[in-house]
Length: 550
Ligand SMILES: [Zn+2]
Image 1 (cartoon, helix red, strand yellow):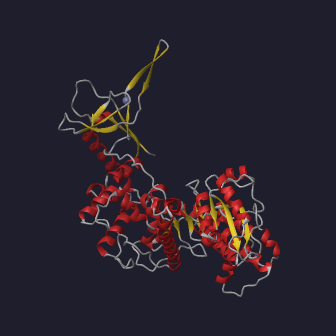
Image 2 (cartoon, helix red, strand yellow):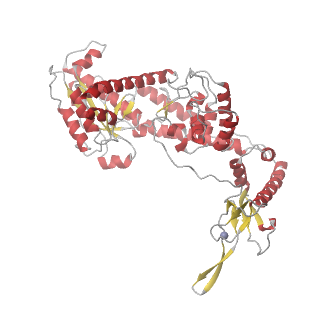
């Protein structure tokens, strides 16, 4: 999720390339940034970063262009570093609240003092910038900006990880340095080896980033549905996954889909049973339709379109969007895939067809002062197992007044009869509606506009200020419209089903419990249950009164 609304800089951003020696003055609070209190209120969930830039000989050595020696060139280098930091902060949904800048050019010795580096460490230890902005992390164009010597790096890691939640941002994203901090604390010998391996890990991650942009598959263990090359499909798994995605869009419970996997003898890629949580991840992974995600965000190209991988796909982007829309935002791959925090807690599953559709109609007497007032209980009734009756292995009971119970199988049978009669009548006058999402043109216009804006920004045809003013609103709108379309298409697909088809699927056993209940709640507003007569043990269908949805 690229979120420019939360990102980047305010007002005048990093100076354009043709500015002069004053670039070395690019330090302190970015122009136009609201006060600490206002900013915290405006962007409550956004990381606030401080940016560090340093110009040095070693930096220029890496630069292919002929390095100039003048102060002007030095300043330009710093301006560019800050400019890249601004863009990267925006890309990672963060805001820069203070800039620190050092110039090492004038000193050739290693023991040169870096005033802003020291100031940055002081502010990290304090947790706030001199202006009072909270510090959630540090951003640089490269680790070597901070790590001039190992001693510097250790001091820096130590200061940053005083708050373990703080992150170190480079162009490839936020990094957790707490592990590194442990290594530094535990001893020098370990440092050498482990720091090397961390560096390697980081290089591998940057390499992954490059592959992402080229549309190449990630390396590592194969994903369910694909071969070890991560490009070609494994038919048995891919077929199942496509089936599962389509059935889920139609409303099947994930549990039902898992049972089918078991029936087909399929397991996860590590041999484990396919459980709902795993299957949810498999179905909602963007790779099923060729898209790819990185740390919970869809990877987009310069025009805001998803980057399409070179591997074989299982479903269409529309199907992928539709299947994602069947889950709460928090449980899809984009919310839970690698690098995003886990959410725990299992939703309560309903076991009986009519649970909570039934309403208790027992009349209760309330005593108000001396007067007795009558009212209907009207509490939703739930199913529960009984062990007394063979004819009625479960009952629906009212847990509020606990004086109304009715035989479960009898109720379910009656509801089915009522439903079938209703559907049969509806089928006689049914006409299939035409499904066209009414806002398609609007979405296309807005998406095109956004893409154009981004292209202009990339090409430096418009200022950062203008981009950040215009892009966030557009992006929010485009996202909202895309979500609406996915929901609309899914609902249209379900809502437009002919009553006759629903009857057939119900009777043939094609629907699972979740789908059946969905149908019931579309047809009935409620079903009232009158209390039973004392002593009469015979199931009595007359106790039920359906309230139809108009
Ligand atoms: Zn009741």
